[in-house]
Image (tube, rainbow, N blue to C red):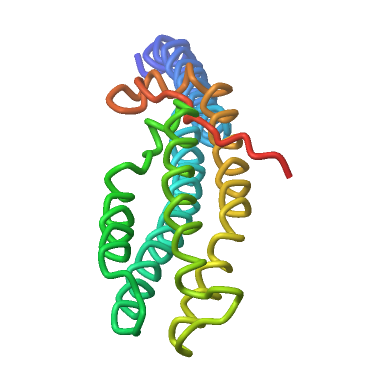
Length: 208
């Protein structure tokens, strides 16, 4: 009786063992596939992480550029106020320049509206017109009436010279971001939300 039972169970055990081996192999393959997907830079999670890094770089370049521009506007305001206390100055002219300078921020382009190159040109022209009117008043023939005024003028000139460099750096970061966004659009679509609707950012296209 015992021998007969063994004969019946042995094939059954063989089937169970075979199933366990197959199941284990399938699970192993599944784990290997999941690990491969996790390591794949084209996976949705990896694409999201890399895109976030690139966007952070873009935003950092933008903040640096805008902060520099804000400093230029602030220095212009300080210079005009410094000049108001000097003899022989035209108070009405200085007040007009101060109002024009104060309007600049509201006219400045954003990361989205700069898709219109006309807006960039208009802003640059508005700021240039203020500075070109301020310099002759602040330092006629290169002679500023006070040390503060001279320092403000020199600071403005340095900030103005840095504009092109900031725009070149921003464009470089945006090009990397846009290229990655285009390359991994299909993976990002699977994430939904903001990642499904992301669009390339406009460029200054400043030439070195």
